[in-house]
Length: 232
Image (cartoon, rainbow, N blue to C red; front, side, top):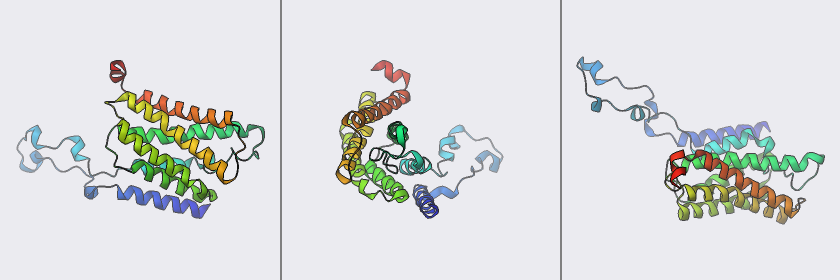
């Protein structure tokens, strides 16, 4: 467990460092021109606050999702296969459903944050889901679940290209936020069934997948500005 945790922190740190701009060393604000020359300077000659802080370290959506998954690994369906085992007793179904809904929120939240601010490159979601699942698989050697994550990532990238969700297209964003966790966990349960069996009934895993989509939809509605909601 300790070795796996060290690997996690190292890989996440590397991911965050790789996202830093070249001007990362320029953390302190430069001296205003008026302070150097002693003469007042116009507002246009002094960079805005946003420009002054462009050099500060920034994390990527992938590193954020991976770090959240690591911190909540005790409630992660890719670590604890509760849908396959009943070792947790009478509360196993409740624990399994809760873990799916929690991880759906922790996945959709950073993705919505990213697509509303930047244009994700092709394959970004496939890489994010594949790497996150591979890293979380270190905890309990659950590498057989990688196909579900890769399949959901490919589907998510296709939806991203077709729907073009964002602040200017709130309906497309809602559809995307609902579909991403639904596809991920439908493929997850199919993967479980094919690699060792599934204890949950179709009503259970189907209902949990649907609720995962509702979780993503609610997050999308919550992050949509009121003016945009009024227009649609």
